[in-house]
Amino acid sequence: MKPLIHISDPHFGTEQPPVVEALVHLVQDEAPELVVLSGDITQRARRSQFRSAKTFTDRLGVSAVLVIPGNHDIPLFNFLARFFDPYGNYRREFGNDLEPIFESARLLAIALNTTRRYRHTDGEVSKAQIERVASRLEMASANQLRIVITHQPVCVIQVKDETNLLHGYEAAVHRWAAAGADLILGGHIHLPYVCPLHERYVGLRRRVWAVQAGTAVSRRVRHGGSNSINMIRYEVSQRQRYCTVERWDYSAPTQRFVRAAIDALPFDASVDTG
Image (cartoon, rainbow, N blue to C red; front, side, top):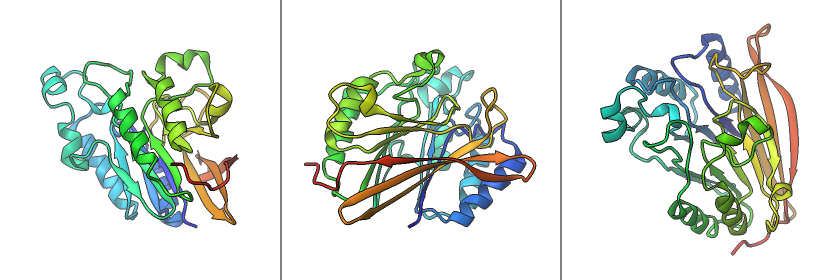
């Protein structure tokens, strides 16, 4: 089965050309069903940086690329643009839909714009967004992998990252879990990990996992970390659903991305969620 590739925080304007080339080759070799880019596409939301990012996604040769903005994709110093046309440069390259949805027989991926022009780095999910996502999740088929994508995380593993949590995350996690979500993908903090939300939140009705991606190609790697992306593989067999999340890190000596870790995620049986 074709995988889903999860890319985040490339921060074009700070990209490293050898890493970009290695990632292009990896995606072309894997031929995924879907590529998700979960925000911070650019470093400073400049037109040239969005153009470079669009050139990159076009080179991947993938029929479906789902992209959302991050906080870096709103102008920081151009105050007029920030408050009157914050997504102007984004829309020019990636279109007007800030909350795209991808659906196939195997996947349902629902993306949210969690940026706000009145917030600098923090993200926010509104009650209306929570309900809109939940309503769509409740329409999913039993065998689909049901994914929600935000930029800021709904789960952190280090105390210093708690200030980066998505505003409204607790209500969102509970509602989306009840509606049938399997994975919540995010980025923002440049730290890759998998978090079992059902072990963090009391009362969740089903197993739900937060999957965070590192920075894909930027030189702004977290201290001690590497450029990395996630590769998600999913299949259904005899009413059982199987999912693995592979972390692929960039190796400077070989100038390639190599598989560095794998998490097998147990799900509940394939049953109707409505």
